[in-house]
Amino acid sequence: MTPKGLYCAKGGFYIDPHRSVEVAVVTHAHSDHARRGSREYICEESGADLLRVRLGKNISIKTYKYGEIFYLNGVKVSLHSAGHILGSSQVRMESEGEVWVASGDYKRDKDPSCEPFETVPCDVFITEATFGTPKFVWQKNLNHGEMIHQWWIENEKNGLNSILFGYSLGKAQRILAELYPFAHKPVLIHSSIHELTECYRGQNRNLAKTQVLMEKIKELIFDQKLKGELILAPPSIMTEKWIHHLGNYQTAFASGWMQGSGRRGYDRGFVMSDHADWNDLIQTIKESRARKVYVQHRDGVLVRHLKKEGLEAFPVEELFHDRFLPKSGENLRLL
Ligand SMILES: [Zn+2]
Ligand SMILES: [Zn+2]
Image (tube, protein in one colour):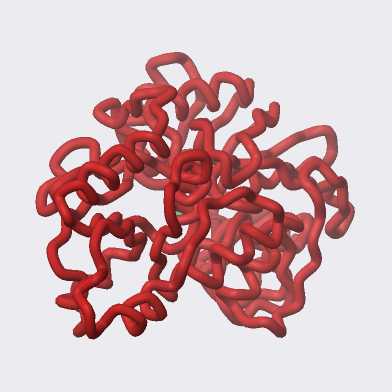
């Protein structure tokens, strides 16, 4: 760990660096992982267009398929599906017979908008733990598409629009993929979702039909015909000036945070997470068979739990580079 983020000193590359670097291996296109300014980006093939939308068309990207092996300064590297969003990857690094895996964000729940999570055995596992407390346990095997559609037609019967909030990248497209077998008319999507959604279609993901919300509003602005629509938008939409054109509506939020007090302020909450819950974090850590585990975010409870289970577990801060600087004059080239 360095001030710029996780750094593979031997391979000379960073994973999801917070600042500009020479070589950035990017686990996925969410803004806390993909930042502008690096000279070269490396990502999984299906996520490259998302990265271009987020970071600019002209960035230099090298892409590899899941499981494809490549070498960076002699370190054997491969990307493996994290099941989080389209193209999301865990980074496997092998050198001198030791394997490290950095998970990035991951989930194990079914998601038709991306490849399923893959378990990658390793010696050292750096895991995210966004929902790393026991109170976050998702109900499994829910049919989110059917549930959302049910809510939509219920509101439609009552002459109401349905506004469903979800993050523009990942959650929105997962909702569209879950709705694909059910949607009876196009879903109206906010413009910030549109371009990202097209990247998913470009990778042959089946998504419910969509129409850009503003086009529809322009069409209908003079007659109050906007009724019974499902509108998919980021939460920021509520501060936009034209919101009153949406007439009478019900709101819902789709998020892991909807479990617990997060649902306050919305008519409905769909517990739909992009991240592993408590049980899946523990299952994944066990299945990795790692002898050492470093935990990113919310590490306290999970680290304590893993230690009780007899694992060597640490908060990721333990990886801070000063602990790894060799005592002799040799330098690790920390940039
Ligand atoms: Zn993410
Ligand atoms: Zn993240």
